[in-house]
Amino acid sequence: MALVGDHPAVASLSQGRITRGREAIRAELDGLAGSEVRFRYSAGAIEVEPLGPGHALASAPCSVTMISEAGEVERPIALTLVLEKSGGHWRLLHEHTSMRPQKAPGR
Image (cartoon, rainbow, N blue to C red):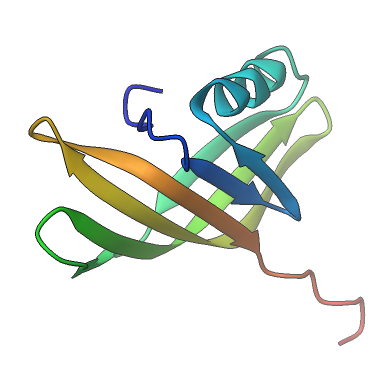
């Protein structure tokens, strides 16, 4: 949460859900903490595009591994971040992840 900005417009978008505000994002993450499923993320090459002196857009291909008692499942995802430089630190303003749909069996 140290990377998440305290800007009123901060948002996290994932799998059709939009979470707005630092405290709502914290609550969503806290809700995952007690889950039986754990997640491990691995990022590929991160591309950064400056959006002026105090903002940047970053995107990267990633993979998420979902770990449960049934085993591990790895899925490719895409990650996009909008960052703002504030107080000498880069903080997250907007985060979006999307998971590539699974192929149907036999395709």
